[in-house]
Image (cartoon, rainbow, N blue to C red):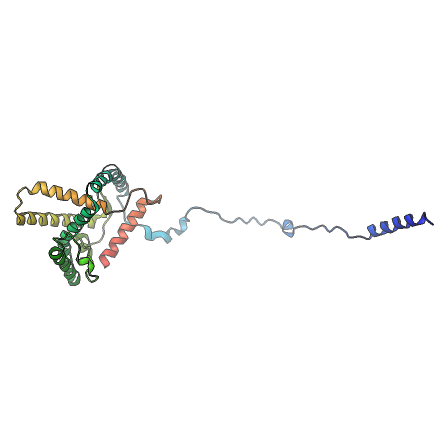
Length: 264
């Protein structure tokens, strides 16, 4: 009887193993599908068939090769000459003095602004510009202090002869990079000539009024200070926009800004 118990136990375990859980073989149904040859398009460049979507970035620039060379020249001139000289100017003159110089120049610029406002037939801008000039000349010690800007109703009207030509209906013309001066177009380049002529006439009349005889030396000095003052108050630095398409970016922004300047 003692020998039968182990035999019965072995027999029962054998029957349980034979009737136990079976292994189920699972397969991914996707593996059994036949290939249809589909491939998703992967592109990292603009689709040539959709170039029209970015047409608004296009600016009329038939002289692009020349303009790009001028842009590179301006960048080098700015880096190796203009910025160091401007840095020396900012070092020699303390900030309050430079602030006064800038105010004085801006007040003198109100005269050609007034002429352009009148040529555009804009009475409101003409009145504001005349008021600014009168207030800053009388109460701002010939413009050393910008008293007029304390009045919100008297914002500065940055009008130039290029804008006047635009108001008269003259188109931009081809984009043009002016040597040393930077982005422009044919209309604004002609306008710059008009503004420069107005400035020379203004300086000549002012020197004559003050009884100054050696006007040539003083005129050159005044033009140099104007250039340094303008660069000192311009934040733009070449090749620091972070864009690999800086030329196109500057060209686009300049053109659009000028369009808005003329509309307003």
